[in-house]
Image (cartoon, rainbow, N blue to C red; front, top):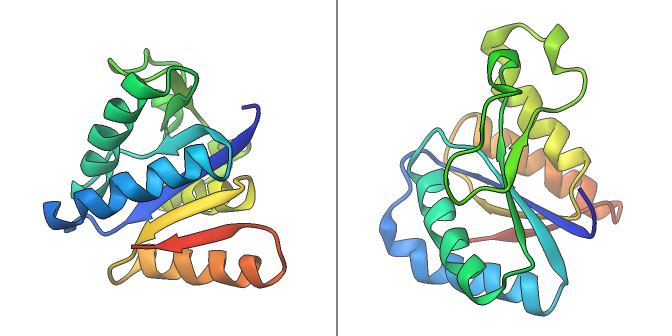
Length: 146
């Protein structure tokens, strides 16, 4: 992945009421921060909102790329769904037990992204955001909370 990168993490119970705020954040990351590559999972309502917003953004910003995070080895070579430019399977994940794969994939993305847009709930999404905020204090990532 080339250029500035952005990952998303959020509660699987997110409300569609954040969609406008999400659209504004994505637009700002593209136009002000120079993000060209976005990666998102597909396991909850937040991810569904992100995918819808990014598919819309691709209509106005033809040069941005959208990748689907594939946390399981069996998904690493599958064809990307419509609207995606590809799938991304993090290096080294094949050694991680399946029940930890999503958490490790999210952690990998936080370690390898320039930006994170987050709508944390409880549990793992909150822990990943706290981890990212620790990295932000070191200047390693910029976190935007919705």
